[in-house]
Length: 300
Picture 1: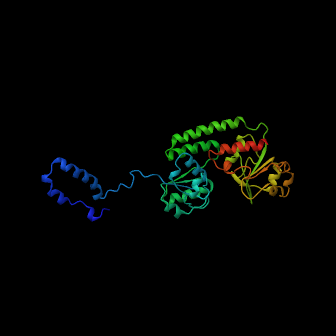
Picture 2: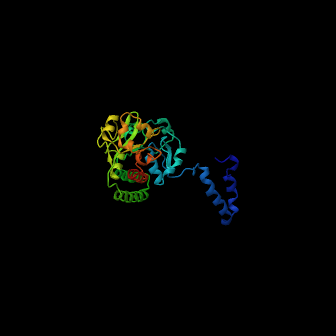
Picture 3: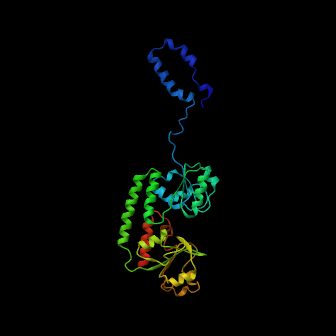
């Protein structure tokens, strides 16, 4: 707002107009054109089209949005959204499994991105309170391509999304030509208490199949499911991959009955120090690095 002393005295100006030529009037008219919007209360500080504001609760979606060049629109994330690094500096709205709705509302998002599985309920609750919500969940490499294209449309980065998918498809085709000629039996443990693993229908199961290896649990009640230690022993895995922290090869070898497993006897147990679990658990373009690492492990 302009202070009173800065306002133009139109009566004073009018009293002097009669003696002015057009040349004298021109500077005053220009000044009036500049000042008039301020006098009528126009606000030029707001853009006619404000930038979208995204809250992202899934680390893989956040990674894809950032890769497509729309990371500057993300205003809030779940605590697991840690790549790229700058996402860790954004306000957190909770964890992947438990979101604080008040924090989400406070960020005034134009759209909230969620994933599947345990976030299905979250998405429903967000919609109930009136927040525009999109759920994206990939269970295979092929579905990841579709997800990237869908996100590209939403964030208006379709050209970039198409380029990313084209590059990914070429890289995956190369890996498929280099896949194992002698399949190995792999056991992936995503949690140890209770013991949980993956089925062939899961995203991780799809990766194992793609490199030419065999997942020892082809079918399970759910994509990510509990199993008994006895069933793992009965399957005789040649390679064990541990995707959670705080566990190593000696911990596995100390389990009752596991000493006879080929993976234990041949020291083919790999933990998060050997392979970054995010490269195989998250359906993002970094999966190419994960697939290459899986091939490397199986070829040792």
